[in-house]
Length: 167
Picture (cartoon, rainbow, N blue to C red):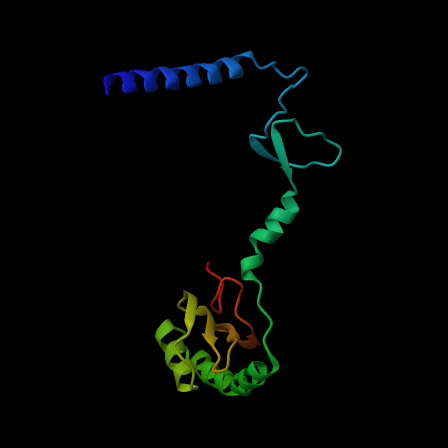
């Protein structure tokens, strides 16, 4: 048993050493200069050449993509018709809030819910609010309430979900 173990170890050593010798004696590739790997993102500027350590990008395109989450999706015709039917009653309810002089989150929420819609998303402070609320058949009713005016519009959800972009 001990002889077999010794023979196996000798054989394994010979195989390992021959593999190492082969790798060590392999000819090195001639004229193989490593290409620099980009390590930083650099804005592309017209007329300027980027250093090899830079991966170029278009800053204007990047900024446009950064704001894409605020864009609205398309709203189908059925959803638009259902939401359009709610514009007038919602505008009237919010106009009553505006003329009543209590432009607060609670008065706007009550007016929106009294118009038959769920509680809205609100952004703002006393006297000036933006609102967004899901329409019953998809899409959104959104706009604003200030001391000067009420606006109500219809559109699809924004790209990152919801009816108002995060502030």
